[in-house]
Amino acid sequence: MNRRSLIVLLIGVLASLLGLLAATRLRARRCDSLGGAWDDARRSCRLPAGVVGESTLQTLGAYALGAAIAVLVAFMLWRAYLAATGRGPNRRT
Image (tube, rainbow, N blue to C red; front, side):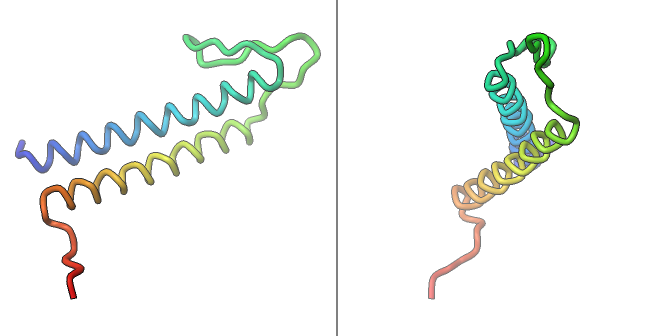
């Protein structure tokens, strides 16, 4: 495996992990705002009796936002890599 493919793999892994972290933190904050306790080990919310929990649509929305954050982070890291190696677009006029 050459250096460039290793860097691409590292960018993908970092972006994926940050996207999943963002989605999990969003769900945890939503759980806290409902008065529940977030269980990090199970990635679930324990709510007090009588409180309606998070809907499936809200969960999908959190993961969609996490995916958008992952794409944005991957784009920013890729552009930083291109700028650092001098392979980016030449914008001198």
